[in-house]
Structures are given as structure tokens and as C-alpha cells.
Image (cartoon, rainbow, N blue to C red; front, top):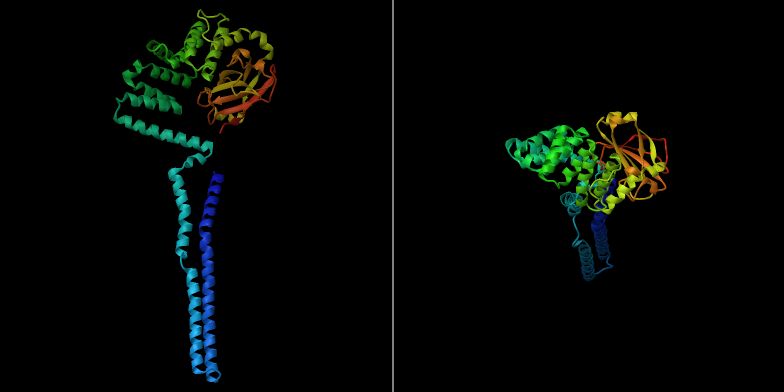
Length: 415
């Protein structure tokens, strides 16, 4: 931000220099003209005195004296007219000072009115301001709803706001106040269940009931299908998880990150279920590739990367036992998308891990397909897969597939 302010001040100073430069030059000429005028008066007075002496001494006649005085007066008038032409049209001192003061004020005011002052703030400060703005708006909405407790749409909006802020208990209370509309809306039921899963880092009985009810109301609801597959997987019903995720997969953008995540989840469900294929055939090429990769994971075990994740003692006070831990492998030269990933909790640390091709998020990008990779760890404060400010991170040095005995210490805080 200091660099921006310095650059802006430099530009304003340059503009002032260009605007006031002619004024300074004119005023210097005025000063010079004033000095010349005063000198002309002195010379005129001396010459008049000299003419008077010549007349008294008899060297200059009365007619000559009159003629000489007229000539001197004519010269003085000409000199005075020249000085006035120099000062004509010049800017007075007050005008110059007004320009020097008003231009910076006008530039600053115009920027803050039409520009984007927040854009020059550091990313951390922008995030903090955005969070503060979100908190303030949420509080205002909560106060309004105290006056209209039957506003179901308002309570749904408030529940989503609390959810985005990670205020789980407040979000649960807001969801409960939505009323009969909640039991008829599959999306709201799924969002409620998702909030409970994020809060508890897993499915409790209420989250299971909400997910199943959402699927009954809208069998193709995307969030409900995703959660339903996770709930079935968590309960050891792998065939059901595969079936639900397969219904979700065709609704996602082919090859997108969401599709890759769901395909990888299907592959893990197949592996956990003994590698048995579900009754329905895979629905697209991406799914088939992920299934084939999971069936051949044992053959690629020699490329697995393993080690131990620890939380630095200095950061133990920064993490809660229920915070989500993402451990993933990423190619040194290649796309930023992880080659393999697994999920744990801070309470599980220190944790021994193994990453191999069975945990691939994309059948075409696996640990065995690269020459070098790095294992990275992130403790997510939000519980989401996307990075966020305040997350705790750590990473290994570049290693080759098959590396063993890695020690990764989570010792950094994301800005």
C-alpha cells in the first residue's frame, strides 16, 4: 500500500509542477520587471536633476530644458508600458496557493469516490475487512429477524451466513427457525446436513436423517447425492455410496475438479468394498479410468510415498482437535492439482501416512506418472478443501515416487 501512496503522491507532485511552472516563470518576470521599473524611475530622477544643473549653469537654454524633459517623460512612459505588459494576465499569489492545495485534495477525493481504495490493501487486511463486513451484515440481519420471526427466507439467509462464518451453533439455531419450509426444501436440508458434518467432522444421527430426507424429496439434488455417498461410505455401505456418487457424476462438468473428486471417491469405495464392481456400469470414461486405476493399485505399491506428519509445538494452540487435516502429493513440474490425497483430524497427529495411486484424484495424474513430487499438509480452519487465511501448513522437500520415512512438520500459518 505504501508503494501505491508514494506513486500517487509523485504523480500529484508532477501535475502541480506542470501547472505552476508557468506561474513561477511569470512571477519571476514580474519581479524582474518591477526591479527594472524602479531603476528607470531613479535614472529619470537623476537625469532631470542633471538637466536642471545644466540650465542653471547656462549650458542649456530654457527651450532645450523643456524639450529634454518631454523626451525623458516619453521614455519613462514607454518603460512603464513594457513592465505592465509583462504583468498582464499573470496569476496572483492566492491563485497559485489555491491550485497547490486543491489539486491534491481533489485527486484524493476523486479516487476515494470513484476508485477502489480497498484494492491496494494487503490480502490479509482485505480478508479481515471482508470478514468484518460479513459479521456486521449478519448482525443486522439477525436484529431484523427479531422483529419478523416468521420470515423463513430471512432465517435461511441468516443460517447460510452463520455457516459461511463458521458459527456452527448459531447456524443450527437459524436452520431450526426456518419452519415448515425447511422440511419441503431438499437444498436447505442438504445445507443443514453439510453444516453439521463440518461442525462435527463427520455424520451424526441428525445429519444422516437430513441427508436421507433431502434425497427423498429430490433424488437428483447434487449436494444431497454427495453427502449421501459420504454417509453411506462412512457407514460401510460401499455399494450404496458408489450408486449415489454415480448418479451425481453425470451432472458435473466432465474433467472438472468436482468430477475428479467424485471419481476418486468412487474408486476408494470400490477398493474398500473389495474391488467388486457395482451392478451398474461406469457412466463415463473418467469413471472407468478411475476404477481401472484403483484395481491396479497393488501393482503400483512400490511408488507409494509414506512418512509421518507432526504439528509444531509452537502452533498447537492455533489448532483444534477437530480441525480437518489434508495430506496430499503434488507434482513438482506439472498441474497444481494433487496427485493423491487423504483426510484426517488434528487430533490424529502425529500421524503415519501413505499416499499411492489408489488415492488419485485424476486417473491420468498419479504418483507413479511423475518423476518428482512434494507432499504438502494443510490444517483447514474452515473444513473446506480450498485454502483459506489462517490455515496451518507444512511440506516436504522434493522427492521421487516410492520415497519412505518422510517427516513433515506443520509449522507455517497462511496469510
